[in-house]
Length: 264
Image (cartoon, rainbow, N blue to C red; front, side):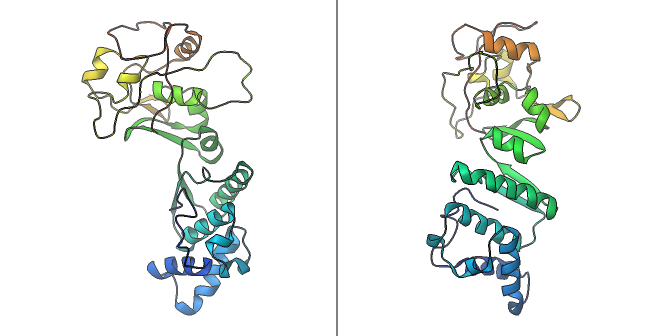
């Protein structure tokens, strides 16, 4: 696992070598007389020279600390590496370097990366497939490019609209939700997103939609998934922002509103 805050995930009393050595011993990766070579190898994979092994976390930059955390994770020879918001605590100038590092490691080490993030721009750069969660439930599962081009779940649509796009040439306004996200300890009945959803019907409050195939390799958990026409109408709508659902039908594309992002 690579955690969000590299400084908090490293013991300040341990040198870089100590941190990696602890992982090697915990997982019984090698004999003790081989630890030094494994530590050097792990550091080399993340672009750090062997002299970093003697340094403490306080002597490293944010990007260097995150590289150490990645080296520690790689040292145990994982098949799957889970990265929890791996660049959110780093400067923008360092984020690009980390994204490039992830891409290189994925290809060179034949690793499967599972990246947990709110930043859809990051997701598009590092992932081949996107799974969207809302209050712990999967609401959409699709290849990255298709997800970015045509989100089907209203929550996915709102997330996509809340991400700045420098290449956007249109002047359509962003979609907005005015209601707060429910507490995870008091989840709504039926579809968890229905109190904030601009397409919610009475059925959504009673029943939980299953994750079903909507297109090849594209699954969505929604009784009323979006179409391309709905997406455009949602942006052009001049009606008030979405609030609690009303008992209205959508037999054909209608003028709709949307909401802002919640938990993913």
